[in-house]
Image (tube, rainbow, N blue to C red; front, top):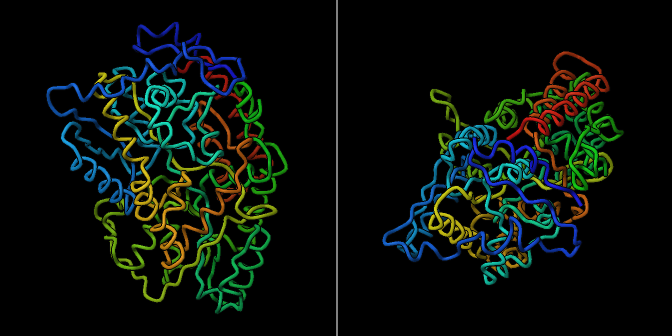
Length: 491
């Protein structure tokens, strides 16, 4: 049983920050949170907004662009129109989770926080430690009808966001890594356009054929995003940090120096040396790796999040204005997709496809607002978790269904069998159903710093030629240092 790591340091700083100390994790092993602790039903003021004299305004912070943003806009508008006691106001905080995290963390001392923030999947430990989150488990205990609404949540999804039997986020947006590939380029190179690569070795073989045929100059384009290395490492059953990936205790050391991480980084280095890799710097919010897949680009294969599916499909169909993609002011917005035929396959792994860890984001209700605000936020999340909303969130927003009730919805099933977008989403969903609830991903307090270190390692390998093992060792030392610093100084 792991113990929340902030108990002692929050005790020393609670007066300054106005935070609520976390209770120690229970050791009952019963599968339910301690009813006297942070997740007791009394912590969640269900229905308080209904007693307010007027409408309660709740702010929701997000960082979405493209079709995902439009889907969230639509759902908020539906909810606002369905009743007159709560008004949801969406506020974009940049075009990346990094920008949103920076804004949220900076607002913690003053408690100038939104009612809901949609944070990245990596921030589970940070959000739990922050003391400003109303655990979903508390509201589920206080509102059993709402709890039953999510009884059929995928086990791996629930496991990823649960610490000491407490589920912190009230909802989750699940995505995974998929392979986008140009089916026309595959056919031109003599490759089967209906059989995408399933392993990294097969990606290299396909890239060699594409380059030899003169179809694409640098066939595989990859943004230097550490998430991909994490997925390959987790997919091979290797950890990123010690203490069972931070799930049996607070992580104190990095464990990146393992065969899977070494293998993935060496593969990247070898692809780069062979001229098969189109490496794009890991700058947040940019889309150059997508642009490389256009007919005017130089690449034929791309790995990226499945959450981009609806936006990519919208661009291909002409239903998305490029200006909605989060491009900076003054950037060119005309995108020619004439003749582009994209296919989607499971994320190629070191040994098999579709393996990895939970990705995406999570909806956290803050505990810094009034009872009316907290209860109104819970009410909106209940609407968001409903089957119709989840179907919309998948079809239009691009995130994969976390509930069987949504996955089995006739509308969604029909779309998965008939439309291009739906077939891509169905392929992606196949990847998350194979994830292991006992190995859902790492809990790392300073996950933002972890990713900065791993990104630097990636870019050092590709852009400066540093040997993969040396880059990994440096990153791992940095991770261990950051874990110690987080334990000592955070909050």
